[in-house]
Image (cartoon, rainbow, N blue to C red):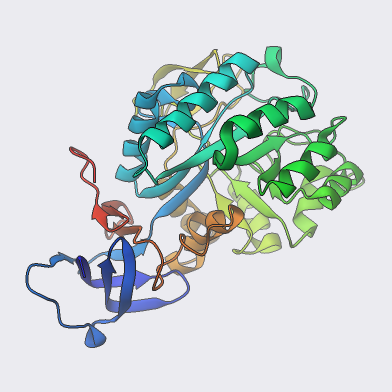
Length: 390
């Protein structure tokens, strides 16, 4: 035993253990349960008193561009390091770096930087890999993506990404209605890459065909998508009725009306919702002007917009998204917690090691205070220190 957490309210999130304990050995959870069953603690073992805290799994963010003044598209190790530090400070113990629609050269630099960073820092396990958002997207639903770099789906370019990234290629977001998209979907699914519909003007029929090819995930649901219509349900209707799909929600108070969140919650249920931040470099920073994919973004009252008023990512953190989901749907922490932990881990096929507090799983643990704000973050059994890392 290397570490023990005692006295907190543990939410696994499948069960609640009052005044429980979690024992950690070699970076994994070796035991957990109610305090009355706590093993004898050897002398010299680090103990964290979690009385007054909720003890939850580390949060998982699978769609995020940046934070703390840095962006994945900066293509530097420093950017990836600083974004990771910000994520850990806010209780996120796993994240997938997300690109924007850019030139082949810019995407290449981001891919190289991420792969080199992870290979040169083998102990790094908070940054999981890359989420390529675009460039195979709809011009009609481009949102804050740079139209100059939108292009038709290309198997050749997909193969280039796969060859460069290997297992670090985690997610691909595209418009499934585009010519050639279904061929890429099929190939990506065979490569164990999660394929998401995003920035898409797909009809219901086009979406159903893409689902038959392996499409299972919706990027920032409702945003950057053909609207739901009673005679043309579109991509939104197709996803809502398919119980095998998962739906990303950005809960920052701007991207989605609370009534829509409640409708999705009622239709899809807590097992299919995946909270994401879609954060850009302004996360953790004051209001002001920032860059996203070469476009100027203004942050005002924490909301990110282009000059024409288009929403441009967010300055959101996962802990705030979690609190907002609780408030909007009126449910307790246990009920909503999978949307920020287990569900995104399951999307990536890593639920066997992350996303919940269970024996044998990685010791990625967060202590939330009475206001549900992160107080202590633990990754692989090591306490994160914002000054000096883990």
